Length: 401
Image (cartoon, rainbow, N blue to C red):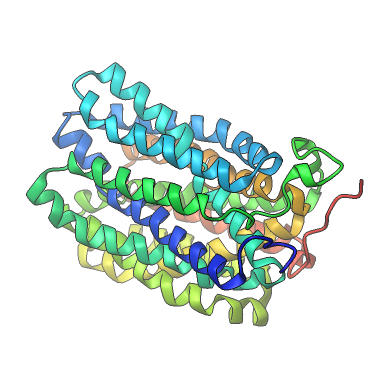
């Protein structure tokens, strides 16, 4: 660890990691559960317009995420991350100020997606650098992100009732600015950048050369096609079954609070079951929850089932991040996490939203959730059958010069 942290002692670095996770996901919790309500109530957007703009944002994140990862690997990771945060804060701050013009607001919003969409995956790579050989403890630091998100989602609904939804952008900008400052304090923590190696870190083909990684990403794509769409359309589902809009923030907060103890227990779960079985269990929970939503359309049951999503997400986040880290060379760590995030959230998000949107229009919301659950369980079966178990606990191998 001494070689990894030349200018930071281990305790301080790990405290900064925990703090940064709080800030990153608190910023998400300030906006994510409420953003569509802002678009409908404040700007009068239709559901179709919201869907298309969301899909376009996902496309831009999908395109830019691997590039950010490769830039991060080839540069000072903490400086790249701090820059992305700083620009994101500026862009989110001006969004409500230009909301009167659809075109200007759209351009600012899409620009914000390019800079903000890759920050969490870039920071995951820095966290893994800091943890080094103790990377199985990743969940104990990532749980602070769930805490930040849960607190924000739970509290800010009431704040917006008093101040209006436009205030969310200013709160988010303040928190993201703080995250940029913390990122600058991580100087020396982000080891393993491409410039420390003889081979350039910009060779994406070297990262994707591992067949086991490609198989893993294929299984994750199937699972997340269903799971991301299920989260996106949760509000639509609640409305269709007679639930109140106030349940949305509570549902997301409950899910995030449940993640915390699971993240805390993650090292023991990894030690007992390994990465692959954690991934299989987590993805099975995703699919099963959607099937139960479809079979039992009862508003209060949505809250009862949300812990399944929280447990599943925590196990999925730990297992997928560590499995990918085990399958890519250390100097390509940011690139590997960017590819994971692009597959799990951007590409899968686009396909899932299109699938759910088509099914909701043609067959109804319950059918969409039922089909989505079956697709998710199919992804679980694919992972169980085809992802090699030898990826469990395998150290990330550096490429030879």
